[in-house]
Image (tube, rainbow, N blue to C red; front, side):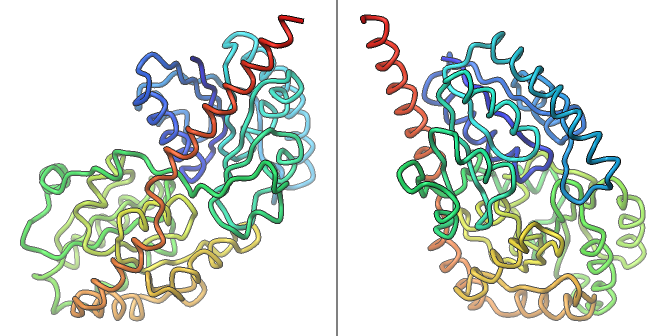
Length: 375
């Protein structure tokens, strides 16, 4: 069996794809999973590290770009259709799965035109432009939130939740302490702003340290900064005397979550799927420029359910962030309630459901082709 998983650009699109790939491999070790993305997305460095082959196509995003860059992206879109056709003809997959992002658009369209089994995963309550268009043609759509149903045809839309990688669900606490050089006796705050980091979170975290000198010997930090801010943030932590590990990127997210007592992060759909599957207390800081403001909408749901705290990016200050960290550190009952409420929202079974649907889609296609051959 051969499976193409297309898309990426950000971890929010890529990591659900990796989770689905893992589930296919767990069911049948002989399954060939081939990723398709661009040379400039996060997939270019993460997918090979995870042990999967990847094919590249020429594609760029259109949203939020200048007129010149939009024209350039449209030209590349034509090339990406050619690239997609060549990839599909070479791989000859049994199914093509789109995980979102501009890298998935052309190949999913080509899969439809070639009458191949195809499905897309929509992580957000407000679907992106690519998936909204593809949803009109593709056989099956798997959604994370009930609100997304109105954007697709009910007959081919399934509420599955957002798939989470097994390595995230099975992270080892003991391994984490060694891997990140953390102390077992200290309360651990894990902060990250997505796969590329977030400057506003990075700077607010550094400022927050100035309002918590009394906690210097009680808490430690694991902070993923992204490449651009790494040295600046690392030096700032050193000056304040707080303990922890500062790193530009974390590949072992399962261990990072496992060792965290609380998490400070953006509110992307994949991050929330991971947090709720694990039941981690969190301070969510939605990305203010997300399409349709979906991150704030996602975060508000968890806030209303008592599963997380929320701070808006435009209001993010070190002092207020320090107060929230201090409250969660001091109030064990609040953390316990958040853990329970978060797990109630989580869907750790999402990956299995999605692969079940994919297997059914492939079986239907095989039966149909068999009937056509017998005619």
